[in-house]
Length: 148
Image (cartoon, rainbow, N blue to C red; front, side, top):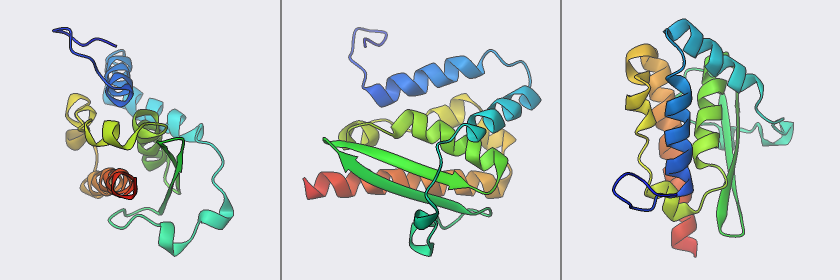
């Protein structure tokens, strides 16, 4: 996919750009929150066996379990939270980063956070949780590259 100026973009960046465009359809933050909650409700089932302390994301006020696996050079993420808005944030992250190559993940800074004005509209604890999940995704990608 070409970006303005003719440069090629990776799949994660394309997904991020598409997501930002979708959110521009909503006039106010109540609609955006509802969209986030709806996205979170559509997360795939998360195995009870993966709801372990080792898979918990630290820094989140709510409970968040996050696992990564690698298939054919791409990282697949699964995650779930006990909080509706946090589940929506997980859905955003999975849409952007799951199924992508580790290098694409590392090459795609989370500009959607600023573009969607999330830091102004999320509570400090939710912002910390989002940062912790982003850090975990980058750590998984870095470890996958080092192992390759």
